[in-house]
Image 1 (cartoon, rainbow, N blue to C red):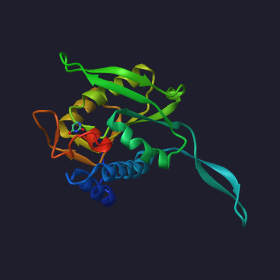
Image 2: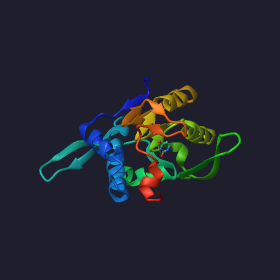
Image 3: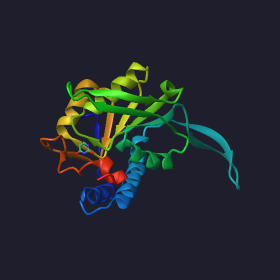
Image 4: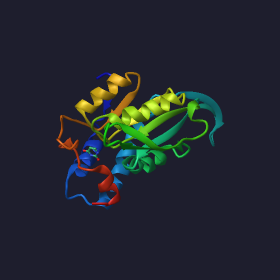
Length: 209
Ligand code: URA
């Protein structure tokens, strides 16, 4: 899976283990999601273009590099994706934030958009979709469809845990986008939970169960 970047940094893997543990309470879970998202943002932005600018240090004039070109937007898929936003913003404070809300139609089982608010200049930005759990892949495919329909071409996806099956679905529909994750789990159970996974990410972030 060439466009899938499995991030195996020891700090990420350590924090992921604590996210998976059922004893981890909401406060710690939320903090860990933020920290993992911040560390992942470091990898997601690895290819950002640089340009030289002239500066003066206290000692002499020199040229030095700054990030140039396209700016970034973070687009969480509501609601669990919200948990990753602050961590990314910590590293990229000038990024703008859009939101996409999707629900699953009970008859067709297809994701349906119920909310979408994006920065005005989003087509000029690299968009990072945040979705902690890529399970069936349906929501991520729908979110990317929606962004592409609005003319956005430069899209990356940031997940905590993906199911292999869901990844295959996303890659089939959108072979052009990169997916960053800290784990690929082999199974989806009968109610669509990634197994072993980490449970319902939204409920664990917001303490709703
Ligand atoms: N959503 C979650 O929060 N967890 C899963 O395992 C699957 C979907």
